[in-house]
Image (cartoon, rainbow, N blue to C red):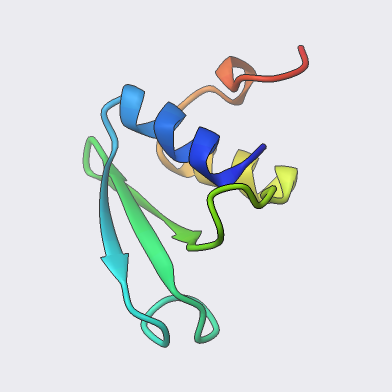
Amino acid sequence: MESSTFRKWLAERGCTFDQHPTGQGTHGIASVTAHREGRKAVIPLVGSRKRLDPRQVKEIVESLGLDPSDLPGKK
């Protein structure tokens, strides 16, 4: 899934985002923290057309209390 599609999907489900400069995220990579209903997950900040690792997407979705089966794409 592309980064922009994923962030749009998260926003549609009530997530808000805090952007962090390089070095304050994970392993010195610029990142965004997604917040939803008291939960949070760190998302690497990559180009909007870059594809994210499906395992990482699933982990983020579950951390935010969302259902991975609702993700857009192949069913």
